[in-house]
Length: 317
Image (cartoon, rainbow, N blue to C red; front, top):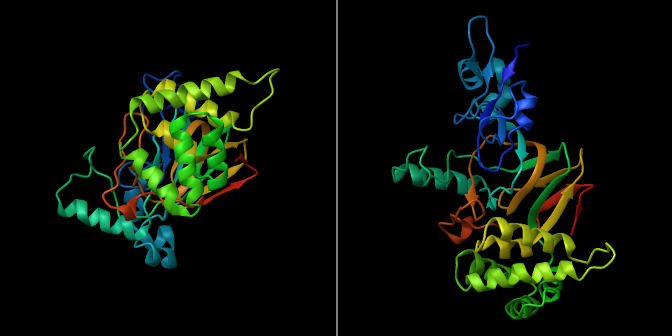
């Protein structure tokens, strides 16, 4: 057995202490460290100790796929390690995002290759041709937004905040209890159509009022959702994802609890430390927060509107 050294990825939402301490390096680190990759993805493969120096796990597998993966796996997964393991350390919210299914990933990867978009370009959405379902298991208390909430609960939340425009949106959803109403509202908000800064600011103030009406420490029915929208609005003023957060399940995982996200599910991790296991992919369609914009080249690539999340013992609405 040989020691595996993961690759550290630095993003502004990461922690300066968690991954540094986990890997035995000086803490705090010079910059936020968000993810520790333990896998063989070409973008950042882990390194394997050998007698002389480290060699990438990708090179080890590529040199002997049958020996490293076994004949069945080597054939089924085209000589590639089929999964990617990460340790994730979030001190701030990640971007609102979804991941493509297998067909979308293949078509998107081929399209961007044909258009000459470099693999390392910030404009690149598809870094590979793999789908990306993922399972996250909390190591600390872990907060997330994941999957669209039941329409009836969302109607109740929008009405509870007492904002005239949200009342109109609630009526729109109540009249279309299938996914069409939610899709129309999601598209309206995320594309920038009819979400003026005044509405976002009004929602933030409404959440503040809602929370201030609670007495003696009692929590309102939608306290967690209101607090999340308030926090996001304070960090990212005028970002439409403040509105989108009102449409998503607010989930809290305690250590050891898990959350499965199928490809296509809209989600945003808010804070905490967790282990993620996913298909061997780095494909992300982003939709706001951390100064991102949603990349939906076609309606088929936008997130699906079913809840599509499976939480083991999670506390979510």
